Length: 88
Image (cartoon, rainbow, N blue to C red; front, top):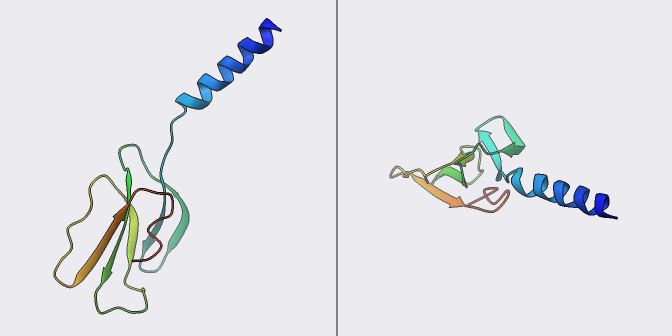
């Protein structure tokens, strides 16, 4: 019984210290990877889209440590929940 408890404690410790990485949609206007794991320190998903684009084809999406500053013709959304950057 004690060995089972020890195994459970070790497994729990490994699980808790393995770290969580945010999952974001990554696109560069043409290629998208829906299962992108963000790197350490990248704790936000973002999407940058041209304001006059109603199709979403100009969208750039990914992971970031700091939210990008939009240019005058862009709109930007940053969020911190898995796959929250699917659309603006």
